[in-house]
Amino acid sequence: MPAWNDYKTEAKQRGSLAFELFVVESTPIAPPEEVKQVLPDHLAYQQQQEAAGNLFLAGPLSDDSGEQMLGTGMIIYRASSLEAATEITSNDPMHAKGKRSFKIRKWLVNEGALSFNLSLSSQSVEVK
Image (cartoon, rainbow, N blue to C red; front, side, top):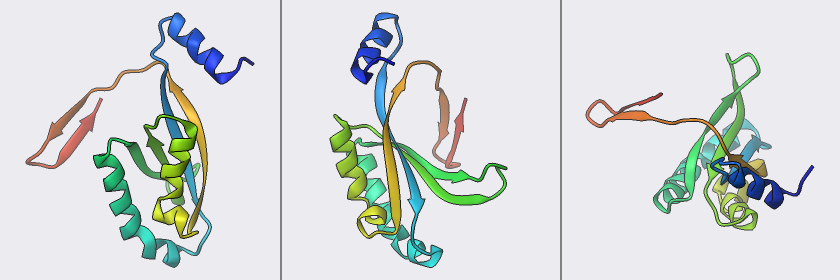
């Protein structure tokens, strides 16, 4: 396997987007009631990261069946480096207060399409 930056260069050379993001898998390590106590601080922090241009997407993941809440979440950040993304993630109150642990990895976005319809008055978003 090539080194990450070598692969990124190869991807760009073959015409791929090679847009680097950072994917965080956040897992609860405290009882649900303790996690819920920190939720308002976590959401406020995520709003700050969104306003700063760091937060790309975030939300909970289901279990394998798709029918139950697992408690795990995925957060995708824009950052200048893995170290910067790790710092952003570490400062999230959920992680800083020891209620959740996290794994973080680089993600190279090469293919796909994204379009959406945003309706402000009905507060709805349709992603296509």
